[in-house]
Image (cartoon, rainbow, N blue to C red; front, side, top):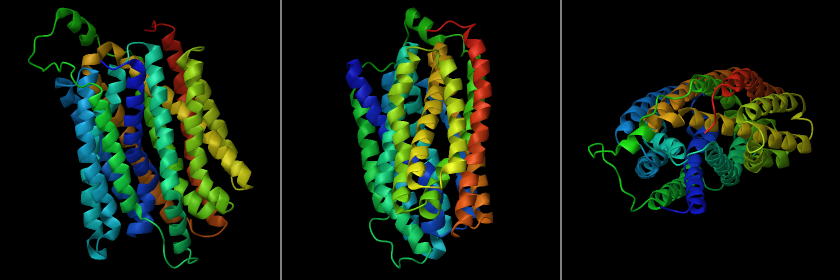
Length: 434
């Protein structure tokens, strides 16, 4: 059994690797389809939305199937590695769409994206379940949740570093300011992302090498049955699914429009190249603070505070983000910090809610991500419809429209999560912590 510190490092690296693929899909897929593949924005949004519906259904089905053989951390670590190989292959195939002949691009894009969404569920479900199975207390759960979002922030930071030039030059090309987009395209970038993702997933599985893998047909000692059978999740899990749906139905408006803000709405070149980086830095640098606060205040209370912080960041972005480069970057930092806090507490509180039913953890996490991805599918479709109806490439007017479309739904989501968190606070007073 690996030491706790080495296990945290391995989990953090594996989370970083998985986040490279997911964050790339969240941040860049719609931009890639409209600006590199050449699809209309509404078509791109519809395709990505439909693919997320398929991904949600795959999460639900795979989550239920995996309860048969993923009931402890070692099994989850091994399953997420095998899933990373298939998801990585499909990710690379999808990013090749920009190099396909024009007449074959649409069919190829749809087939490759649907294959990636199904394969990603085989990677995502066991990885999400891992941190619930590998922790035994609230402190451990929120510690791993913090590591997860440090890794996610680092992955976004890495992505913005390797793709900012491609995004910026693609925007300049569409505005007629340059004739050729120089540097590596998304396909070449994806090869590096997949190599890292699969490599780090392998490291986590290796940290559990030699542990006994209990098969579904192996008799389980009564003591272990008592620990894993459970009496079902805490009632809070329903409220947390509702909160996740709110976040997933509104957050993508900001996330998926970040490249468009960078390409078409930022005040100058410095803020354009730095905006996505500063959002990622906010998510990354704030995680130690959120984890530290969890040891001094209840996570339910902190959930309320971070949701209100996110609402305030949305208002600041709407009113100030296009005035000066320092304001643009500062507000990006604040938005990333607030959004990272809301996400960390959502996942940590859900792991706490289902901890009493470890044997069925993949099922509950599959249900959790099922709701999230259905909501995200609707959001992506709405983003595509919105982009199709606004002149987002037009100077001035287009930038204002991008900002409004980015932030107003996110503000509504933050306020909804704040209201749900109040109910969670009341439930926490009735349920003892573990």
